[in-house]
Amino acid sequence: MNRLLDVDGIAVSPDHYIDGRRVPSDQTFPLSSPIDQAVLGAVSEGRAEHVDAAVGAAARAFPAWAALGAEGRKPVLDRFAEEIGRRADAFCRLESRDAGVLLSRMRHGVVPRAMLNIRWFAEQALTLQDRVIHTEQAEHRVRHDPAGVAAIITPWNAPLMLSTWKLGPALASGNACVLKPPEWAPLTCSLLADAADAAGLPPGVLNIVQGAGASTGAALVSDKRLARISFTGSVPTARAIAQAAGANLVPASLELGGKSAFIVLEDADLDNAAATAALMYRNAGQVCLAGTRLLVHARIAEAFVAALRGYVERLVIGDPRDEATELGPIIHARQVERVEGFVARARQAGAEVLWGGGRHPFGAQYFQPTLLANVAQASEIVQNEVFGPVLTLQTFADDDEAIALANGTDYGLGGVCYGETAHAAALAERVRTGFLWINSFGIRDLAAPFGGIKRSGIGREGGDWSFEFFSDVKDIVIPKKPFRASFSHR
Ligand code: NAD
Image (cartoon, rainbow, N blue to C red; front, side, top):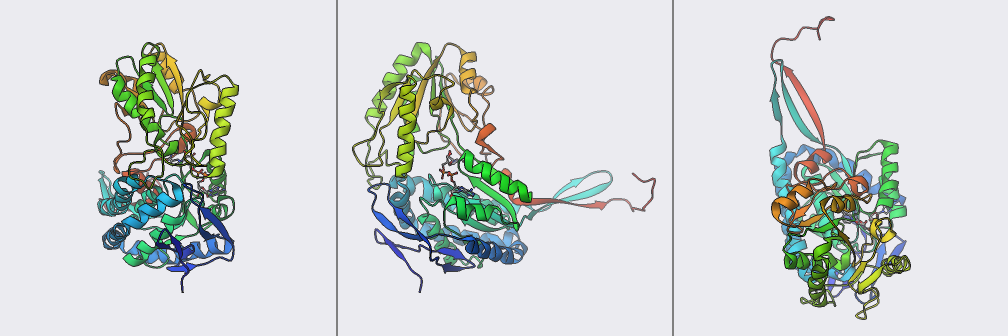
């Protein structure tokens, strides 16, 4: 009989999912809600033996799953997406409870997107078979073969979205997966196993091992049987994973943090720019692609800050399960302390707090939306990712200075630029980053590339880029004229 946790009336397994079965551990870790610190239960903590069993199950399941071909896998993956949809309410309420994500965002954004992540890649995989290149000498049948066992490691700020964003292309390309969910918010990934099971995913094709990064995660990424590692998380963790991947020469895709610029040019629509800048506080600022460094033309800075203040003052801070709430809690007490530390050190270094600056009275893990001015480019608050509701403000006199500030960090994930469209687009070409939104924010498409440069990551996800990563490209060469071996032949 499988054990189940009861989280607000939702039954969810606290155990691993290995080879199509729930597997408990004698070691567990406690889980509490960021909303009110209520204890949600004890979750199985993976040891080396669980990782070993999960990778072994995936390796055994791989050949048959790969042999199904994209056509054979598509109906199974379509059913997987349907089963996610059937559990939509549970997914929404669970992730709101264990990660503090807004319920409204779960309902209208995350769950539909999770279904699409599975469905869209299953459909796209059909187009990947046998691309043929004809040359004078030969026909090249270029195939995308499934790579093997893929390790998928995801962070807590968007567990369901990011796990399905990686599982979609990995499974659709014929790989078998071992998912290591974030230890601070593992519940929706556990529910994902129920959906996969109900959809009839063959045992071993998707395995889930829960646990801490330094133990369970580290054991997973050093397993020699892996063919791919797909990771989203922080820079220090990426370094550890890259070393493990390097030791076994396993290709790793690394989607990391950001410190993106939000540039407001003198010819920008100020009110629109300010409304979008307020969005940077979304998910309590725990968003990798947020433009957290506001770079504003000096002549309009005062008016822009006044407009932004108006939007920030109207933000509804509260329980993420309340449909009206716009700003919820920070994931963990340790993360709140981290955010507090950043703000305290910035103040010591001379930063001026334009608003916010401390905890919010709604709850122990709530932090006020904060804006810090008078910050030096070289300072910690400008150079390092806070991952909380803290923005900085810097001004510039001309485009060259805006570019110097925008490019003056080690990160290069996203970016936003508000201004007359041609002006903003020309400026965007000079920003060193993975993507940049002009007069907008957050427009994403599964077919478009996503990823960062510099410390923000290695590799791209989305569309063809995901398939390239999760596949082994093979060229089968068939000569057009009879071939006769000869030492003088070139
Ligand atoms: P993290 O790096 O601490 O953890 C991410 C995952 O890695 C977790 O599942 C964790 O258990 C695991 N992990 C930790 N150490 C490991 C190890 N040695 N070996 C294997 N796995 C290990 O990151 P986090 O704090 O959970 O997430 C926040 C970070 O994620 C931020 O830096 C944020 O910018 C980044 N992020 C990036 C993107 C993106 O697409 N670029 C998206 C979301 C979040």
